[in-house]
Image 1 (spheres, rainbow, N blue to C red):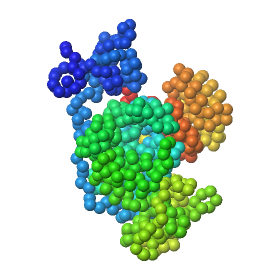
Image 2: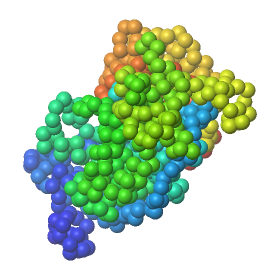
Image 3: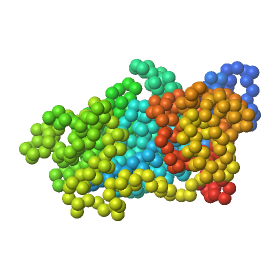
Image 4: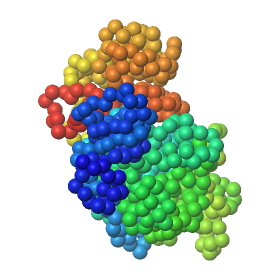
Length: 604
């Protein structure tokens, strides 16, 4: 049998199934039948080997000059599959002349509270996706679909508060907040443009997973302080391939989503990567995600760059029309957000600061709340009607400058917390007839809406009754809370208040699951976790990390210490049992007998 190069194979369309390639061209899922090893003493299995991890790929690159793969047994070398993925959603859906969705709705107290619940659930999923993808290369497709469907449906009623929430940007949480923001803005734009429901959901799905390939990159290169050399740039650019290769091994990922992951760094002028696609060759969702990826990155504080304002970001995108970005999408996206979308910080001509809340339907001008400093924080003041500096003398307050998110220490998370109360107070002081009816009994009920039981779109998946769970936390309150919560669900609970007792209990009789606080009196949770992973009896025990520190959360994601999931204090039943459900779905824990097995992913 003759061995052809890949190009020759494609060109001649020969019926051969074996292909000799350079080891650097190996993909996950390739089936190797022969090797040309550097060391002639290396013994290769006659039956062949399937490449199932990045470590195995690296071994073949280091030990072999050439490898021969069986195309008929490779998972992802099917030309028709790749072509189908690239062609997914290539044709641009119609875009309306005007996209006014953000100008047709106003912020309400109930809307903020309900949008926050959806934001929180999506945020938890974004964190879980990163962890699962890094450790296992797996995505909880069913769970992601549920959250994506909820997010897409929410755009009808909660577009304004959800866009506001994308302005919560914390450097310590950028790792997962970036994907969360891209998902919200992509789904919001697709909804506002009138695209069909499936495309809105795929836009949200793509936003959550498009950058997961970065979890497989070198942390040293990602966090390098200074300019990257060419080799490091080439390494960073592999994340699109890495993400795509791992994602398509998860059953149920839509073609349009996998295509957007692979192609979100392609450019309109053909100078992007990894395939050098040009113009309409780039899938529509990849074009949209690439655009919003850049917008959110520009407006966020990152390791190598300070945040820029909304207007500065739009200016950069506008200059890159028909070069880096799709011209039509840039223009439509700019129109969608307008010059001051909800959550935008501004400086007024009198020197005061304000935050845009929504737009007045009659005038189309943004309505904002003045901000007043109280000690080290800001409070929401009176509502003002904004106009750009130099506009016609309409009596509106003039804006001198649009500010970057987080400017002057303004904390958007804190402003979100107090926003429902400020809006409800304005409703009482304004015209009662214009107030949205919620069937409640005043402000107290509005503020309690976020505490209602989270809506579930399917039955919760649990681990078996009687499963042993070790809770490690120095706080008696946390230990008691988790003890009560988990015992009610049928689990057997063991408690430890420090690292020494926790390790002793785990090594003597390994539990089925561990909840581990990051800050302990005699050690850090990271140290405990590393010792658990070094011990054969506990190396595979699932661990859920707990912390109330944003910096600890950052360390957790960036250092990749080997935990399976993460919850942030304060937490409730939803966060705790969502973690257990994700572990069941990933195959890390068995499923409780009698529950529907169709919702659970199989392990590889």
